[in-house]
Length: 112
Length: 106
Image (cartoon, rainbow over the protein chains, first blue to last red):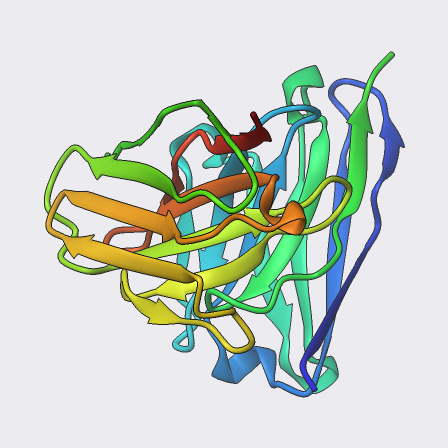
């Protein structure tokens, strides 16, 4: 069974940084197209970033330059490094393998 | 950028009736479209990919159709657990999601 478990969320001040992790089991992150999707409170889904099997990375326009997606193949872990965080980055962040499955999400709150 | 537009924003339907949800892309995405269902407090659940291929475990009362720019999710006979939010997603070029359709009890 494939399982994705996110961690690393929490409360951070505007301008701060966080690194989210997504631990995968039942798959290899190097053999999957992996993505991060976020959902701000009470709103819809927003794609953040993806990394493909070849290691190419893709970002939604608003996050380019602030967010970095990466993976650690030996531990089957996906990461999202988020810098210069803004209040509008407050959301539940989900990782996904292909279109499915998704993890349960980790909450990031950016507030002073 | 590919923009996905879902309609209506809210759909009020009686239990046992049919619900038809629409999703439109601002350019052709072939059949590179997925549908998700999201229950409160939960991660989205994949219903369909390739516009009309049902994901594992999805009951046959759900059906997906369309290609190009216009897509439809149909729920043939609404059950109590179906009154939640549905999103379409294109994966033709990056990913973008529609804003969602909430299905409410009439």
